[in-house]
Length: 404
Figure 1 (cartoon, rainbow, N blue to C red):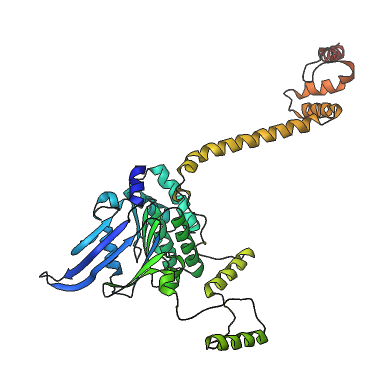
Figure 2: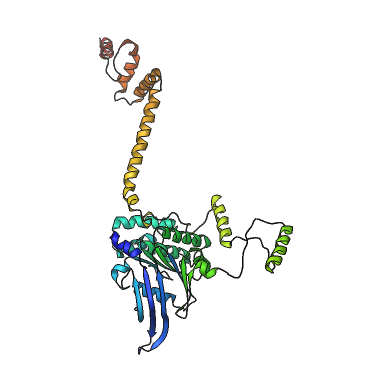
C-alpha cells in the first residue's frame, strides 16, 4: 500500500489532456461547448485554484473530475484511474456550491449519515463527528435542526461533511460563500493546515483575495478555455514597477531620493503612501479583542483545532489512550507520594489526637453503652462500645431494693 502511495506521489493526482465536454439537445445536436480542450495537472500536496466568471466551465470541470459527467473528448485521470471508478470516489471529499442537507436532521445525525455512506464504523463516526463539529464551531448547535441554520452555519456543516471520510483529495466549490470574515479566515487557515498535513485541494471561488492567499497554482478559465495559468507570483507580479519598503522616512529624505532617481534613472517617484492593513485583518483584530473581553455572541462559534483524524499521525492516534492512562497513573503516583510525605511530617502527638478524634466521630450502634463508657472511662481500659456489666448489676439491685 505504501509503495502504491509513493508511486502516486511521483505523478499528478489529476491529469487532464485535451479535455472536452459538449452538451447536446434532445436530438444530440451540439448545444454548448462548456469545456473546450483544456490541459492541466494537479499535483499531490498542493492547493490548486480554478478561477473564472460564471459560465466559464469551472463547475463542469469539477463534475468531470468527480465522475458525475462523461467527457466528450480528451483524457482525464484521477489517481491514475477513470474518475467513474468507485475506489477513486472513496478518496475524495466534495463540497458543492450549494449545500443540500436534510433539514429535519441535526448536525450529528447529518455527519453520521454521510459517515455510513462511506462505511465508517460507528465508534469512529461518533469520534469524527465530535471533532469536526468542534473544528467548524457548531458544537453548540449540535442538536438543532439543519433547517434552522443560516447560510454560513450550513456552509460550516458542509465543510465538516466533506471531511468526514478523511479524504486525500478535497474539492471545495465556493467554500467561503456565506461565511463572516472570521469564518473566512479560519477556512483559509484550515486549508493551509490540511495542505501541510499532506492533503491535495482543488478550490474554486469568486473571492479572488481568498484564492491569492492560499493557492499554490491556479488557472483562469473563460469560455471553456484556459486563458492564464501559473503560481500567484507568476500571475500577479507587476514587472513594470518597483516597490521599496522602508520604515517611515522624513520628507527631506524622500526629496533627496527623488532627486537621485531622476538623475540616475530619468524617472520620478510616482507616489509616497503609508502602508495599509487589509480590512479583514482589522476585522479579526476587533473580534479577537471583543472575545478577550468575554463579549457574548449568538450563532456558530468560531471553530477550534483541526480534527485529530485529519492530522495523518496514525501512531499518535493509536497511542492516545495508552498515553492518557500512563499520565493518569503518574499523577496518582505523585499524589500518593505527596500525601505520604505530608503524613510523615506530622508530629506523633498530633497524629494520635487525630486518631482519637476520628474514633469518637464514628457512629455507635448502642448509645447507652457509649454513655456508660464515658462515665467509667478513667477506671477501665475497655474499648468504646463494650457493655459494662457492673453498671447493669447496680441498676438491677437498686430496683430490687425499692420493691422490698
